[in-house]
Length: 422
Image 1 (cartoon, rainbow, N blue to C red):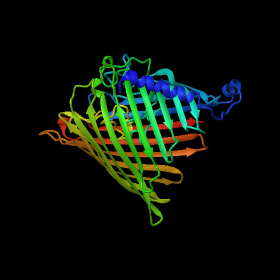
Image 2 (cartoon, one colour):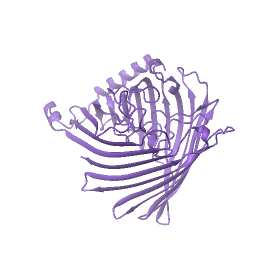
Image 3 (cartoon, helix red, strand yellow):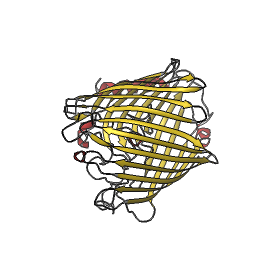
Image 4 (cartoon, rainbow, N blue to C red):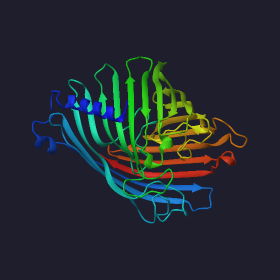
């Protein structure tokens, strides 16, 4: 479907929604504007990066504040606005990747540039009684499934949000249909902090369609099908990320002797889109199995493949990448040889403290004479939530590089943070 035809269809769908009768939460516009809900999120964080490089370790002390307000709905309409401000506390002994920052070229990277911006600002329309549909237009948070393909990069201090028109429909039993048309990705490097060239360069303009259909009525597993059609503007310099990805995901659990058996299987294929001349076809696969020992711990083992074809690897440029392939962030971009990640994890709770450990073994999908072993990594985390609104955490990642030709180095990262939100 052409962009022009899609836009006409989009307008028609929104128009139909606007004239659908329903039951509204507020009787007057004034009640809607004054009867909403404020929100706040404050996080103070220390991040240390220790790399085997001829540069100084990074020591980043940062504070982030988000303040938001969501109105009540009037005749189905609502407004949400959220501002975000990120500041370095003390000396800036880290490379934030923003141009002109004092740590550029001298310290390791902590990708948290100082900025103040609008994180979310959208007009919504909901008709939960008749069509069970919610529409949003504007800057918004989008997280689909486990955020492997579309996410908010919630780990970084500056969140990733999307300028988009989105629809979520739940009119069919046990089914959620999501569609979004994205025109800009507000990436973690912020709106007003001019970023360096390369992977950190600014926001990404695009004309991309995201489609996701999830069905949870099958007792054995939830089933999700998706199509992510990314079309980056030629002016961005990132048209290599213009891709068409189609996939299916199964995620389920089954009782086993008072405990639960956990299992996930996923497959996707990715091809280059019109603005991308790579001419490749790469596969993605995930197999994961685990057991939830009720009241004791959750254990999982998995295999994830980001395949390679004709020298080009499977890409996930809109993902929450930190959550996958190790917390040391060595594989934010998939290596040209592709990536195989075999991992095991354990999570438990002790005296109210959540504890987690993950081990990764990385290999190339298509080995060369000099590149096969891409390294190994241990990840550890402890978090404690208290008094409903507070969380403190300690997190550690230890990556050991593999074959020298892969260009990786031994890397250790440590985080300590505290968060307040309501």
